[in-house]
Length: 398
Image (cartoon, rainbow, N blue to C red; front, top):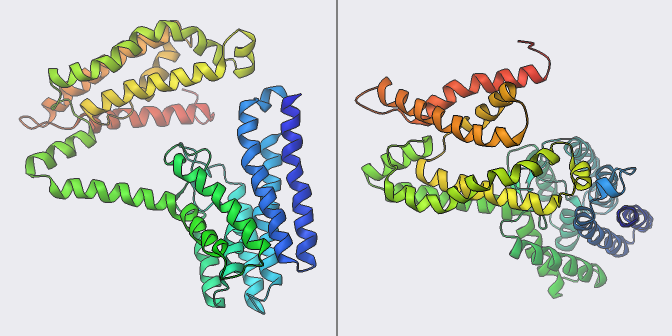
């Protein structure tokens, strides 16, 4: 029942979209933006509720993702584009260009299955034209600036730029979530006072919009600048060590580093037999796992924490050595089956054997120098991984 109530809450966004559209037809821009702000608030609430109440299993007859995308396109794209066209900000042909670019590019972006990154950020500008248009109404820039901004953001939808999700992107959530709430407040306030440039809401709206738009890109640039600064400060030996660490190497591993990593890695290895049952249940699907008595969310949190701790400690010692974690489990599944009681310890053993074998090759192939292990594992693992992909797609039956 709770899952259904969440879907019903999401569907209210369609009602607010209709009210906003009616206000836009009457050129009551302030009322239109107030309804869009209400729809934005509902969109920020329904996602966490849907994940908390597991709507995919408690109310599977309704597709919450599709429902959310339909309403988002109306409130984030269609109505703001219509308002921009009907306003006096883009006269003549410029308005036609803007609405065609916005609606067409956004339709393609909303259908792109790659729009979310691994950390739940957006890959490319996420089509939040409601936030852009309300700032344009408040600032009223020249026509050429608006057209340039529309073109740049439309292209940015399909570029590998990271835009944060204020709720789901964990990095900087402590700042992004309050800023998103502040944007909601300032947007409603700015619309209430008819976008008065003397109001504090005017500048609060602009500043919070700039943060939400550019925070992901700025954080990526800041991380790149910090890495570049470390490289600049490093001497020749440190630079060589950094390069080898980035490509993966056991040359820098010492007993001191191993002892520092052991408290994070050994408990995870000892916990593997205890996690096998839960992983076997999850392989059947979350709904089946719950029926088998597994607390799915709690188990997933524990598993992610264990993987992050063990992987982070390993990478800190050896650097990034790719394809070992991809090739070994898939190979063992073909040999011994999917039962995690045997798959987990076998993967740990075979992974260690493969790593030592790759290290031996790396030390001999260009002796007396040493080749980074990551190059050896990538050269061997990439063709195997490609074979797995082609085999799953039915292109290869070998």
